[in-house]
Length: 186
Image (tube, rainbow, N blue to C red; front, top):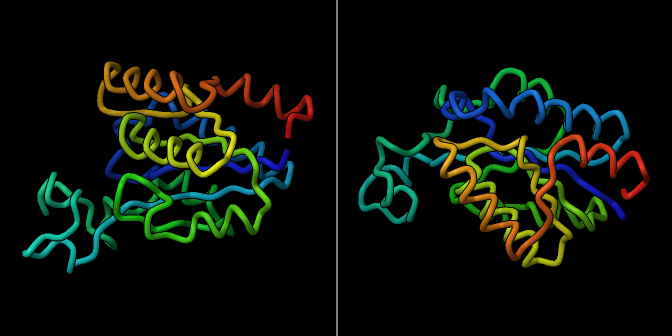
């Protein structure tokens, strides 16, 4: 089964949420790269137009312009280790929690022949969970890597994982993902 890695929003603004998950995200990326499996990264941000009233983007309405990530800002940039890992990989620019909405993500996955998607990144209970559910709803077998995701609090992290694991796909730790891939479940 053709498997791709999707790394969600590992950006400077979320650095404080990645201390535990960053090494695992990098290990997954390295494994996929060394086995020539597709890797896709997302980057969340809003244009000047989206941040200027009248507000039309629901996330900007929810968090306000000052609580939203401006495209091109320092906070919008990928974290340095992730930026290096993403070299020569597609980066999907998105402006809502779901990385499939208003992006080329579906086309990229079809181009790669993807049947299974391994999802990690931040925030577990927002963009990661929403995108992983959306992948499941689009027919992809979806693995969410619990120890390669981060968010603001442990409670939020667990809520995101539990909601996804209940009805949408498998919750796996990084070691189990690597083991399954090595066994040929690719």
